[in-house]
Figure 1 (cartoon, helix red, strand yellow):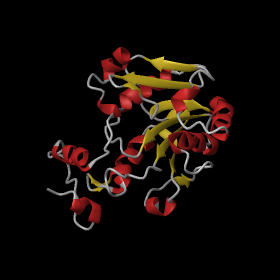
Figure 2 (spheres, helix red, strand yellow):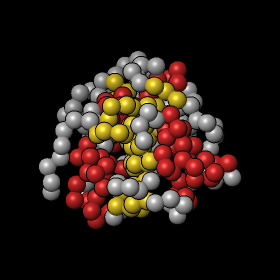
Figure 3 (tube, one colour):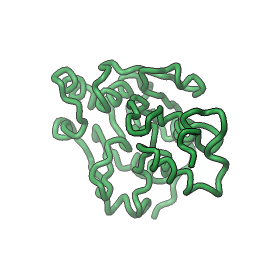
Figure 4 (cartoon, one colour):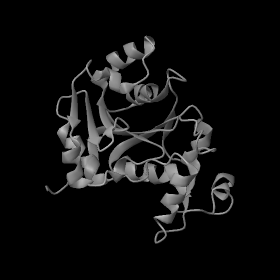
Length: 221
C-alpha cells in the first residue's frame, strides 16, 4: 500500500450532514457525549485535519454554535440527504466536497485520502462496502449540481438515483477492504444500542459520557 501524504487535501470542503431527526435515538445523536465532547465534534476535528474548510449542513445552526465553522441550511428543506449534499456543494468554497454524516465516528483518514486521489475527472466518487454503496462517505464535484438541482425540483430524494446522470466512479468493496477490512468507516450510530456499543468499545479512551447532558444520561446503563 502506498504512503499517504500529510497536510490538507487541496480544493475540497469537508461537509458534515446534521439534518436527521434522530427518531430511533430519541435525542439529537450529533450531540451525544463522546470522548469528552460531543459526537459531531470528533467528526469535525477529524475533517479539519484533512480539509481547509469544513461546514455543517443543518437547519438548526444554534445547536452547533460550539463548532468553529460555517453552518449552512438546506436550500430544499425536508428533502433528505440529497438536499444536504446539494447544500454542501452550493455553499462550498471549493470545487469538491467530501460528505459524511454527523453520526459516523469511525472515519479513517488514510481511506479518505486514498479515495480523494481516485476521483479523477468524475463528478462523484462513491465507495462500496459489504452493505452496498456508501454515498454518505463520498466525494462530489460541483459538476453534479445541475443534475442534483433538477432532481430535487422534480421530487427525487435519493442520490443513488442520479448516478446515471453524471460521471461517477464506484470503488469496489474489495479495494476499500485493503484499508478498512471490516468497513468500520461506514458504521453509524442510530440507536441507543449502537451508542452503548460505541461507548463500550472505547473504554480505554477518554471518558465518553459526562454528567450534564440529558441525552447521554438517559443512555447510561
